[in-house]
Image 1 (cartoon, rainbow, N blue to C red):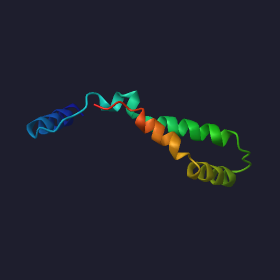
Image 2 (cartoon, rainbow, N blue to C red):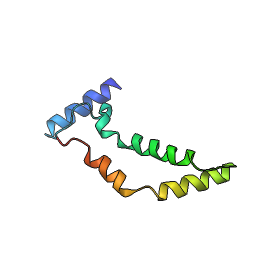
Image 3 (spheres, rainbow, N blue to C red):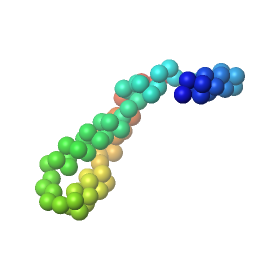
Image 4 (cartoon, helix red, strand yellow):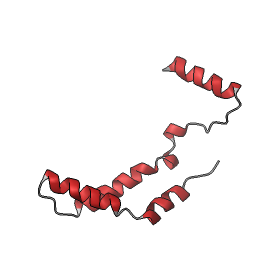
Length: 80
């Protein structure tokens, strides 16, 4: 809400808390979209025959998520 945003901005300014501009809209800070996209591609390649198998595959692929991939995404974020 606009009044909450004004109140929040005022609080941050009064307390000299630095804020990055337009953070919610920055594609650089939305790495989770890339993780979900990669997870979806890996799940698509697997043969799922039921809801139970889909859940099992999702959990397997999530746990097998390469940490190097996630680390690369995080490192690709611009620093302020």
